[in-house]
Length: 503
Image (cartoon, rainbow, N blue to C red; front, side, top):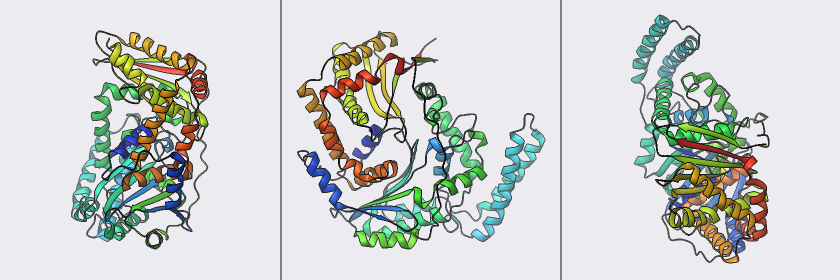
């Protein structure tokens, strides 16, 4: 299960799914956009579920994406990590999947839930009764053993695998939660039966063991990884009020207290038709897809989304600096606050991203890695860590011994100042735009890539057509706009710097 962080990561993931010949890279942006727009068919069920279908008969397969507009930004203040935890729990089955007798199992589950609630209450006390906790844990073990006779482990995975599924996965990001799979086209009804059942009749069995799993996941991927800890520290410093400051996995102190009742309410609130986008791309007939989805998903009740206000991050009035001391190689992260899509400045930052670190001929790689040898690696990212709200343009770099963070940081600022004060040449602008076009077209050259990209922008912006005019917008960006945007946002008072260094 992946954790998604930004559009550049998203693009790389989609590029990794390519299984067919690339589309012609010489296709002009305008014609490509119109061609895609004319081929995508969009439907909305009466309950609010949006469906995107693209008939693409290059192989007897289809890719299916379900996206829900809910992620780490929607976690409760004391329930950080809930969106990710819920993603895990949705693989535990339903009232008909993952069980051989739900009627009998459900009675045990009710008793288990009562014990979990009592344990959580006791553990949350300032002076918990350890003897009482021990008694409850023993009772929970006994009930869990009784439940095991009714549980069919990993049944959803097995059904998909036995029917030829590939690329079956789920991911939680700051903005969205995604479930996707590719199947032979004649297995489309199997997909509809499984996924509609997961939406309508979820059973969050194995709550306590899975809570331990995600806590262990954090221990292995964050607590023992200085670079991941630096990332958390960086985001918590760059964002002072916005929930982009919180980790997708959740704060370590919150995770043992993630609550099952809250999970159920979180699910009922956000996994609703109005918050759901389904994209199907492959050897299918659009009318058949819509008819099938309506038959299986149309019975979901239309439920209005809550009007939850997420606090805007206030403008930054001065540089923020933070350091993490650890026995690890030095590293630094620099971030600048900026607006998100569909702001024109966001398109400009996509170009800045490529100019600075788009491959071995980019400015930062050529000058800091190859020519000066001051950096062992350097990369930039636009739209970090999410894109639903105003975000960051970020720089990630590691100095090459014997150079230190301070020397690399100064060299990075020199390159940024050059971008602000010197017009980008015509050849460099053309090369950057061509690279964006090539990467963009590659990302759309597989069924999975297309379904992923269409559903991403439909869920995030409310209209998949964002991608049909994307290349046109990129093509219109001028060198003067690059200078203006760089000068506006890439300033010392607007930046956050996080350093990983030894004591």
